Image (cartoon, rainbow, N blue to C red; front, side, top):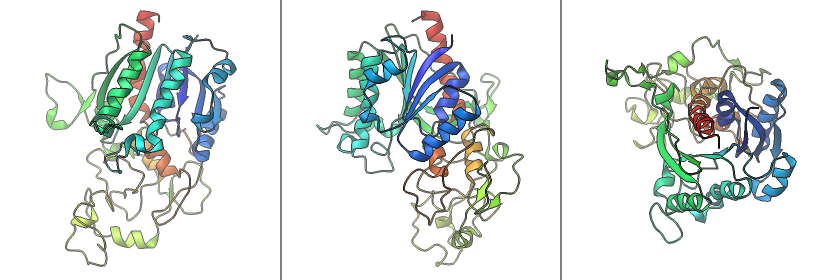
Length: 365
């Protein structure tokens, strides 16, 4: 039988894909956003899986009841994993930590761990968690509380900041990963497989970083807005944004282009390095974010959700459900660009899950 896993805060399923490809059977996914939940259901249907999709607020789910529904008893679940909402700890946001209810969701994983008593736990978060202040204003207090709470449940946590580009993802994306198992914890984080070309040598025979140009090879011209194209390769760029990105060189951002008319640069400052940013074909992308949509290297348009998915490492057969939002538009729930940006790159989740399986195999936990 495959190792059994439960996915919390599943989002669009990026971490799920990597966990599944490593050899885990996903028993269930819990996700509150309706569009992300539709994306998950679509994948389960296409792949003829039995994974249960639970569209609900995780705070309203009783772990004991869910464990019974899944036919499990304590210590039978092999892996509990998830990436709770990160806005509370993001270095870009206001960093309210536990004052923000989204920060409290991080500890929902521990509520489930206490009941399920899984053999291993995997948590993904932004780097800001490491320095987030607790209710006593202690820098790093929230992270220390998380580690202490895991230890109180008889787990040994290990953590590391990982850049997705180091594992073949065409994107610079640093996140904290925490892996906890029972004593002793023999887990070892995976060794990088890729590096910047200037850091590669005979002593470190790594592959060069995967570039945006490599990730987007083979994609045709995107369909115009309003087209019913299921692969999400749709261009929704409004004319105003086509005008504003015109003249911005590949790999550069609008605010730095002082030669362009002031009305084109209006409202931007030198700090706006990710607004109206063109990606470069010659290197990995900047971290994909929810606030801005990056622009194509050569064309005066946004990258499409499918191009975002390529950069993030999603397989082409994986399909997203939900609206595609232009910068000037508003979508109350998660549009497709944000579904990608919120998720863990599948190839990175895959290599971490491979290492977890090695520990589960060796220890026969």
